[in-house]
Length: 316
Ligand SMILES: NC(=O)c1ccc[n+]([C@@H]2O[C@H](COP(=O)([O-])OP(=O)(O)OC[C@H]3O[C@@H](n4cnc5c(N)ncnc54)[C@H](OP(=O)(O)O)[C@@H]3O)[C@@H](O)[C@H]2O)c1
Image (cartoon, rainbow, N blue to C red):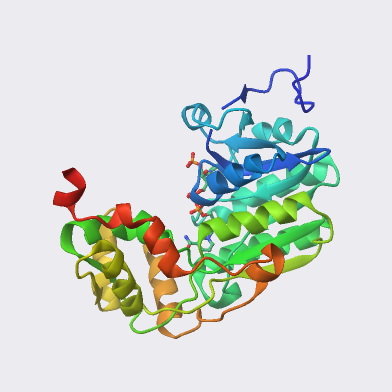
């Protein structure tokens, strides 16, 4: 017996969720990997909203169980090649999302090897802006080079830092201390909203003509953390400060918050890139692909104002 999109018998599937990688098919089938993640889950949401036929992969059954209704989910672990092959069956395009860890190039190499063995499938890889300039983007560049060398059709999406990092990493101290911390000085960054990255991903997955292309995805303006603090203050209706630390102080703080060694070094290196003003480039790729302006930081801040409420107010 085969499932709807030709999934082989024996593969574990789920009909509801959140995913890490995404694959799919418009006429054929596409797949989203990393579907439980920040970007993967937004791509799933937008792809389903426009009726794309997609499958998503999840690392854990627990997360797969929360997948959106009407979507086919498969359990897959980049570290376990035998789980990758069944996930590729019948799929034409793949949205590849790896986690931001030291092993990303090795994990994605496992995946790319299985895709090559499974035939000619188009990989839309979520990468990062910055190339060899810093540790996180450099790992992504390793993967890009691996994909280029594979001979597979590909498209690279290279976003700058996410606006939603403010919610995922800084909202805790914004709520409890009216402050957030870093060591990027006055460096301005053209942060981009994850919803714009997902909109571009869905367009690229749904259409032809994007093979061999790379898109640099940024917001419409570059902002310092001082400017970000002012904008958050406006929606939070109280003063929020950005506190700039020395790199060594910031490293100590993130290590004591439980961030592992390599990730702390990579984060520090990214702050260095930001401090040097090397992440301030504004491109028009989001507008060119979606036909509308990128979401502004002011809009993002209004939409996520709930995440920045003071603890006492949030509890009432
Ligand atoms: N944050 C930024 O500002 C920024 C900027 C540019 C580029 N990026 C890049 O964007 C990518 C996605 O970011 P994100 O915030 O969406 O990441 P994320 O939320 O951590 O999502 C990563 C996804 O990968 C899945 N995953 C982890 N290990 C796996 C494994 N062994 N096998 C299968 N799936 C696995 C995770 O599943 P679980 O949920 O089960 O762990 C999750 O769904 C990262 O590669 C990051 O470097 C980030």
